[in-house]
Image 1 (tube, rainbow, N blue to C red):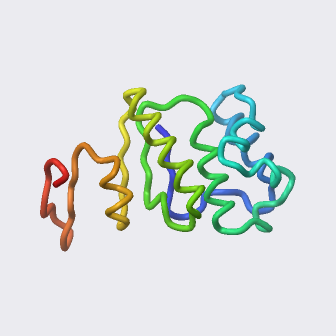
Image 2 (spheres, rainbow, N blue to C red):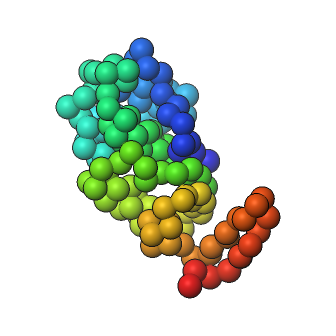
Length: 137
């Protein structure tokens, strides 16, 4: 399982690379960390502390964490906000790739346009109950 929270789950005193190294160690993966940073376009920030990064760059670092290791279920909570246009392209490409690989993706979002472009099934909650459950229209 991989999870991208709405709140940043990063260690601010650590650098971007140190954050990835920690996650890779915890997950037991030996994937090249530089490649993960390059994939999301933030390799130039590898030695910057998270507390020095913009919100969009932090979000991209969180995307880099998602690609470390393997997962069959990917949970995305409001993944598009704070990403610039290129960041959204990168995220959407990751989602498309995961879908082709047969992974299950649960995406919670208020950004209906972005969410619907990936949805096979749509659940709309209203006042805490399911208002709609079916194919996107």
